[in-house]
Image (cartoon, rainbow, N blue to C red; front, top):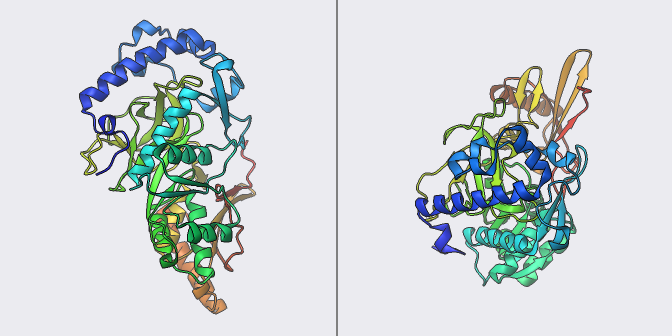
Length: 433
């Protein structure tokens, strides 16, 4: 078994706990002294740095949310002098002001380490050729995997997304072995590969590291079949650093959190109460090594489970499950909670494409719920009656999973716009505010 930093990745729980306690106390003091915005939150909560002796006291600290990050934009949460910062990254800003995260050189070095660990966790080494098809620029995906690949010593292809046939040409010519991109783009590359008359035997890929958007186990298996690889999950947030907060190992059974840099908690999203290991709740992270943008108890809104069962890979870091949805992105349709990942799971289970779009509207006081699903090329020859029967059957399968019946529209292959970044899965036309 290979590791990038074995001493810490396989450290005893006592060693990890002592390191977290030490770094948390130091970080809380730094934040209190340097970040006025968070100091005010602590004072309102009646908490001082002296109250935090270690991770057992973490629950005493106030939460940070994305709303706080927007309120403090751009410099209100800066933890170092601006002159010590060497880079920013930013979220897309689709729901308001952009969130801008700052990095010192030390922050970038640690981020590179985390991403290097993820590449090794996926079976990579310095002998590999890593093709990075995440977007570069303000988006953290490209720069994160790029930095980890460099740190590990791989030959790095900074392709970014787009121009898919050229991507495949480079895979063939340079014999890329590891692919990094969003899962939806990986599926698109796989489709394009087959449309070009090629098979996985015509490329040298062995593994893919996919993140930045929700995806299901069904989609994992689909990508693995399309590209002839093992598909690994990676998790991160711009607010914390980017990809590499956690990563999958050979077990592909959850992502190891880099606990020497991030302390995870699971809370009840309604009450803020910390939940025990094994329960589903909202994921909260505390960054204990970040200098420029040190967030304490940041609410991710991702719903998942933490578990620390012994892992066959030998790493002792706690695992987080693949996010099961988001507490703020959850769709409430006709009074029923619906997650897009549930829709995707049904589609793939029923043999349909993972290219779909959910459209929600309102007629009078009633919600409308439409799901557009692309037919596979082998299904196009069905009769009109056959298509109608298939739509009805799929609606029934959706009702079983979701508890609410969507109107299914089976549409022609390639008729739903492809995304080479994050896939747009939901269009909500309701005016709910």
